[in-house]
Image (cartoon, rainbow, N blue to C red; front, side, top):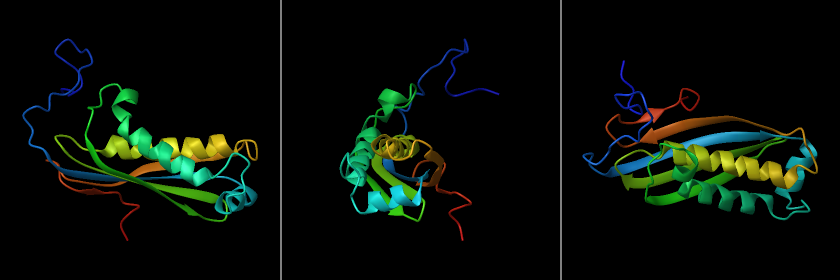
Length: 159
């Protein structure tokens, strides 16, 4: 078996995508921050001492999507067309959805997953004085479209 990120000497390499045709790519990732009812309510009502948690987490997630190649060693730097981070607050869960699009030679799955992860970490950072036992989890690629391998939809996303 050959690995695309290893050269003939088994050393790490960035995959050559120069001969691939740019196409529209999109990816959606989802994650959750599990916390207390009090924290979820305070976040929803913008009553956290550090400020508007979701606005800051949204900007952090978008910025993270744009800088993914600086964080993930063999990731290509992409020209992102759009990045969006949204939240739904449940009783004890803050659900995060990140959607990233680009017209490029490789997919934006890592950018969507990174956006979701950094948004979750930002929520943790801004709320840790209220609940240090928060859990960040269930970060998953929900869907991806575009590229040679075609569309992917996670099983949890299908009805």
